[in-house]
Length: 431
Ligand SMILES: Nc1ncnc2c1ncn2[C@@H]1O[C@H](COP(=O)(O)OP(=O)(O)OP(=O)(O)O)[C@@H](O)[C@H]1O
Ligand SMILES: [Mg+2]
Image (cartoon, rainbow, N blue to C red; front, side, top):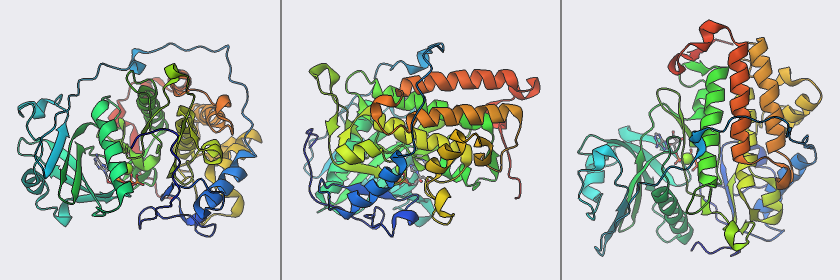
């Protein structure tokens, strides 16, 4: 199931993850593409590749500035993993759980963590009023377990005969079960019961980054908050990449997979596409696998070669940085042609010395903000390099972001510097 270098020849298309056609490309800003083809004739791969090709022509990253060095924080060290998995031998119901959560600790080790009854009780029989989202995997519900723990219950679409969903489900489970980090959504457990497949994860209460950039939460994220979010994401992904047991490539870094806490801390979610990274000790440099990810975030080299490395996440992170700065979605179909692919447009403006045009109009144009704008776009340019060897590591991205934040704070007025994180989003300004 997790074998490396196993090409897949079929294309899967679901209502949530539709296959691309050139005509649908520009309406796919937040849709997920899942292509399993190596064929050059596959319309998905062809269409996505055409975006990527258009993209890759315009990015010539500057050489990274090796003279700058930033302090290395303990933040990036992978903490020891406290997760323990246990399995139930029941024929019809299987579950694993992570026992490191305070409110879950009273559960007996080895017991089935979740039963359907518990899930039904937690979600009031999957009541529509408890529904909080819908994605390619299925429907997401908010729930409360008997011990009071508030959780997000991800209920897979009932495509039991779709073995690919099964593969994706298993992938999410295996990955989630292994990792634990402040900036990653915590995994509580899963349940397979007849045709139900359910993942239970930490509920993160403050919506997705994309929702905040779209001002759906009655406040706008200021520059400092956006910088902190970028750093949180860089920490989480660095953790995955340097994960001691098995380096993990996330493969679907995007703003709807960044969940925010009440305090505007970012937590990276959705490991459904994750695959174990190449084992560098054994001499492998990449994993060759099916193309998965989301339109607008996909690494062009991965699309071209089907070779997946950590640098594919770095590319997606570059797209995310541009999103944070501009507030725009990676693909904006309604804009004029030159502006439809946001990163391409922003990089062009940046290299022409016109970065200010790309700043989210909701952000105030101040000197510190302009400084952050230039520096973030400079980093994005490196992340978006067409060839992975030219991209910085995620750890390096985090280091560069620390430096930007430090300089930004020094440039900012003292009263602003002392404000707390939760105060650093401001009310929506009407355009
Ligand atoms: N742990 C969580 N806590 C709170 N809300 C969540 C959580 N996980 C998901 N959501 C909500 O449910 C929505 C759907 O999530 P899901 O991961 O299924 O799809 P997606 O990330 O939007 O798209 P895709 O399937 O392409 O990744 C999210 O946009 C978010 O609003
Ligand atoms: Mg998601």
